[in-house]
Image (tube, rainbow, N blue to C red; front, side, top):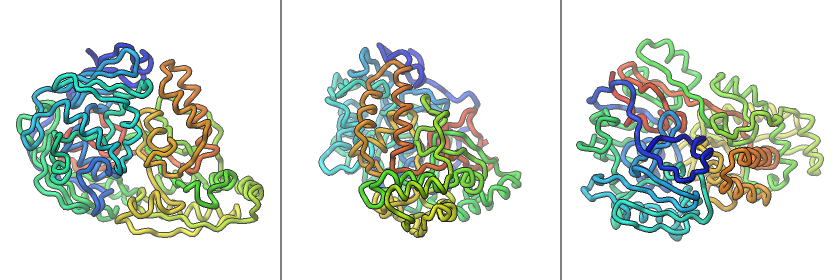
Length: 512
């Protein structure tokens, strides 16, 4: 039994592979104290329903604190078991997961196979609006093979299936009590809910005798405070009101760096800042107009002025530099006003006037980024009207609803995971509605292909299709830049899947 990375899993074709839980922090961590953390991305509509989690606040408080998933991506990028101890498959189509024994929910109910099956089924229930629906709908059947063993038979082989079970939406709830668990926050995580005021704060306390004892869970408790305003969040850290914050405001970064009691931690991952357009709404129905907009943004200027150098130029493609099959050699959709004008003429237009909805709730500096876009597009004859949207309710009232808006994605650990979540036809989080028969054909081929060289060819073409024809303008990859008080001790390796140590900050860090 051994750990295996995503590359290793694909390279072996997932044949008869067995993966086990391991990986204890290499440094000595101290138990005790109450963490106070200021986190952006909260909404008054937040709940413990993992199907609805979409931003950093509930991702951090959910799968990184109160709840567990079947698997977990470790800080070093390897896959390990969480509520599953191991899993095996001979053909990547039938997977058997062996569940951890002796685990209890916060209400005392033992965890077992029934909980897994019922927790996954809620994502495909009638009327359910879950971003994890594509993952669960790909499971043809789930069979209980004893209280701590579940067999999954997929519609078609998927080498990435164990990785997908770490998705932060796929929280494990107690069978027969899911509604109560969602209402009260009853999970199997290291911390139980003491108080929860959506959009304001959550208070949690450490569970004694937890199965992760000795490996994780060093704080006695935590208060997760919702601070969406960037200035207020930075000020809370500077004045000692909180011990850590996410999404460092680059405008005040020099003040943080100058303070000897504060440290900034930064990791490079697949996070990308985007401007998705609904391709079923005019004028975005025309490919040439989408291409004109892609050649109307000065990407280098955005990286310099919005990210302050904490990132890299992107090419309208969600597969990032941390992905295995990232195509770094693709020709860039460079800023070219003359080419943009030519593309508009191809669409029968001499100019274009459109609205772009933005709020800093989308990503830090989103309004400024939209205004930079507005300025650079003028040279192409494109008049962008930047509509400032309220931060509260942005993800429920603007994203997926307004024709063109600002957005961010954390990226995903594998190519299929990213494409299946946001680009597969008909999935809930396809935030452009873009349809391409060739792309969908390749998506299915890549999912079942176990030869790494062939997968590379497939994902290279898919990246090109999204970049050239898709409905998302992706000008930049953004590093995860968070900050903490020197009172805290960081683990040796910090995860780069999401913000705040892959949203596992509360269970991985400790007081110094």
